[in-house]
Length: 93
Image (cartoon, rainbow, N blue to C red; front, side, top):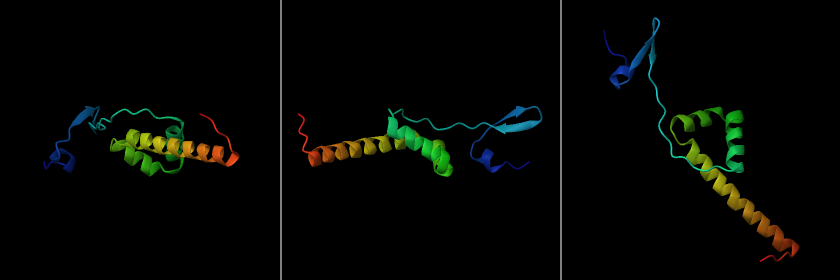
């Protein structure tokens, strides 16, 4: 019997009753601290961009992506607050 493409790529199966289930594992991903902005973007991806969410998750890049989004949003938030302080003439040390 000819091997399937999955078997040709060194994939393995496990037997459950009369079915062969492929043994799949997700790539390991480095853990990053994700703040409020990262969590909000995660909710957005899950609700409105399911394909992007699944792609990032299965490629092991979701946590890194969310940490970067969180960092960018936090920097922008700080710039906005500083701009508002200057516009209002507030000087804090």
